[in-house]
Amino acid sequence: QAPPLRPPHHITSHHIIHLRHHITRRETSVRRMPSSSTSHDRLGRILSQLAPAKENMPHKAKASAKSSSLTVIDNRDGKKLEVPIKDGVVRSKDFWKLKLRTYDPGYKNTASCTSRITFIDGGKGVLRYRGIPIEQLAEKSTFLEVAYLLMFGNLPTKQQFDTFTKNVMRHTYVHEDIKKMMANFRHDAHPMGMVSSMMSAMSTFQPEANPAKAGQGVYQDRKLRNEQIYRILGSIISVAACAYRHRVGRPFVNPSSERMGYAESFLYMMDKLDNPNYRPHPKLVRALEVLFILHADHEQNCSASAMRHLTSSGVDVYSSIGGAASALYGPKHGGANEAVLKMLEKIGDKKNIPAFIEAVKAKKVRLMGFGHRVYKNYDPRARIVRKLADDVFSVVGKEPLIEIAEELEKIALSDPFFVKRKLYPNVDFYSGLIYKALGFPTDFFTVLFTIPRCAGWLSHWNEFLDDPENVIVRPRQVYLGPGETQYVDISARGGAKEIELNATSSASVRRQYSTGNP
Image 1 (cartoon, rainbow, N blue to C red):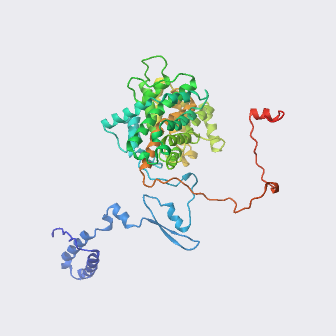
Image 2 (cartoon, one colour):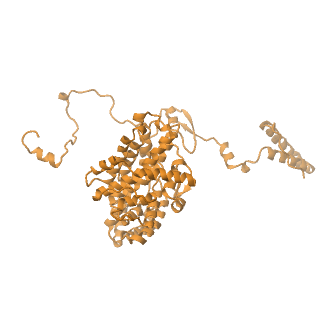
Image 3 (cartoon, rainbow, N blue to C red):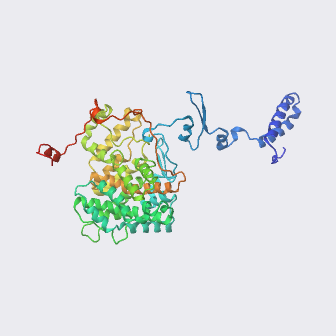
C-alpha cells in the first residue's frame, strides 16, 4: 500500500480542479481496464488529502462556507440590501440604507448591547453567570464571591477574595449624615423610596467620583472606579437595614465588631437589640445568601437596562444606581413576589384553587408567579428556591401558605391550558413565601431584591464603561402626530377636545367652598 501523501504548499485550487477533471477522465478508462484501479486509487488519495470531502469538514468550516448575511428586497422599489449577520443578530442601522427603522415596543427582540456577564436560554431554562451554571453557584459559592465573578469575569483567588471582601465590608459603615437624612423620612415612608433616594443622595458625598464635577474621564481611573464598587456594595446593606429600623421605630445599628459575612452582617444590623452576643441563625443566613446569589443579575432586564441607559449620559454611578433601583421599585418589575403573596392570601384555602384556576382561564384574575418574558421553561432559580424553603421552615416553622402554593403549582403544571402556554413557576413564586417566613414585611421584599441586584447593576456599569461602542442611548420613535399646523390665538380657539384637568385633595376641597382666594 502506498504511503500517505503530503500535499506541497504551492498546490492551488486550480490544481485541485485539474485533478478532479483528470480523475473523471480516468474513471471512464477504469471501466475498460480494471488493472488501472491502483493508479485510480492513488489519485483519489491525493485529491482527498488536498480537498477533504465536505461531510468530513469541521462544523465551523462548513458554516464559514455559507454566507453569514441576510438579503432584503424592498418591494417598494426593488432595491436589494445585503445585511451582515454576526453572533445571530443584524444591526438595525443597516436598514437605514433603505430608509427603514425597526419598531420593537418593549425591546422584545432587540439587543441593545453586547455583554459577557449573564447568559439565559429561556427555552431550556438555563441561567449562567460568566458561564457558570446558577445551580453550582447557589450550592457552592457565596454572594460576595458571585459579586466578584460578575464584576471582573472570573472566580477570585483566595487573596483576591480576601481583599475584595475586606474592601466591601469596611464600607458597611456609612456617613453619619446619611443616617440623619434617613431619620427625617416619614415614619410610614416606603422602604424602597428611602433606599433609592439615599443611593442617589450618596453622590453628593463623593464629589471626586462625580463626572459632573471631576470631569467625564474620572472613571478611567480603575482604582477610583473600584472604590465606588466597594462603597455601593458595602453601604447598600446598611442603608437597607436603616430603612427597616426607621420604619419600625428602632435606633440604627452599626455593623458588628465581630467578623461577619455579608448576609449575616445585614441581618445583624436589622435585628440586633441589646444582646451584645447576638448572631443570626446560620441556616437563615445561608438561605438569604442563596437568595442574594439568585437575584444578583438577570441579563438586560428593566432595571439593568436603566442602569446602562443612565450611565450612557455620563452621570455618576450613584445616580445610576438610584435610577435602576427606582425601576426595580415598580410593581411590574421588583414587586412580583409581593403580588404572589397577595394572590395566595386571597385564595385562602386549597379547596378554593379549582375556582381560582377557572377564573384565571376566563381572564378574570391573573396567575402571579407563573410565566416569564424570557423563560419558556421552568425558571432554574425557582427549583432552588423551593428546596431552600424547607431549610427555612425547619428553623422558623412552616409557612401556612406553602400548602396552597404547592397545590396551585401541581394543578397548574398538569392543566393543558397552562402547559400549552408554557407557564411555569418563576423565582417570585416561592421567594415571597421565604421572605414572609423570615418575618420581613411585604413592602420590604423589593429592598431584598435591590441589595444583591446592585452587584449586577455595577457589573453592567463596569462593562459599559469599557465598551468602545458605549454611546449615549437615544432611541428613535415612530411619529404619528399631526403634520404642520398653524398657531391660533387663544381668543379664536374653539371646539377644543375635552380634557379632565381637575385634581382634588382634602385641602383643595375645603378651599373650593371658602370665600376668597386662600
